[in-house]
Image (tube, rainbow, N blue to C red; front, side):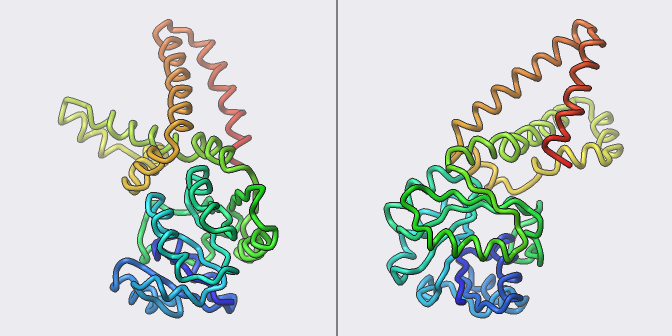
Length: 279
């Protein structure tokens, strides 16, 4: 099968590696010629170009650009495609994307692989990135079953765990477990940098170890992605942030009141609850 990838960063490049290893002919498009050349030399794609018309011969196209570019790129892309071409995306927000693209292209299936690293760019692409990771598909009532089946088959071949849900359900869920952690993690880093004693700040930086590394990782990631999460999933994220602030206020109150028994009960509860999210 000829598969196109529009956007050759971490996700697009990693998709290319896995799809080529299964015998698909992969066509890649990037904004930069240097990225195109790198993708070919790394073996992520068979052909690459800065011209979107390269994807005219693709049977399936994955849109792997930043969230804010997905709809504009699809508007350009569809002028070059056959009516039977299946288009899917990998954006971490689904409702506004599905709402905008579905009227433009009937064979569109919203998608979101829950995989990635703190790194970005084609150099960060890696093989087997999607194995055993959730991959969410958000078809709607008008999405053709044939298009869904095509995307499902490809996703299954990546070794991913497929989930189906409504676009709005997806956005509420990821606001809790993906977008909220980015904002909390960023706030943690900013709060630490607010230490006014330079000697104490330097000491904290020297002592920072696995606990700080784990909780600050996503807050130290790609700023562009963080802004787009907030911009395109604003209402769900605000709801999550407000609920987080409410819980933080409760913890502050317990500590101020020196209610250590209640604090321990709360921490015992969160210790157990975490197992429902992370094995």
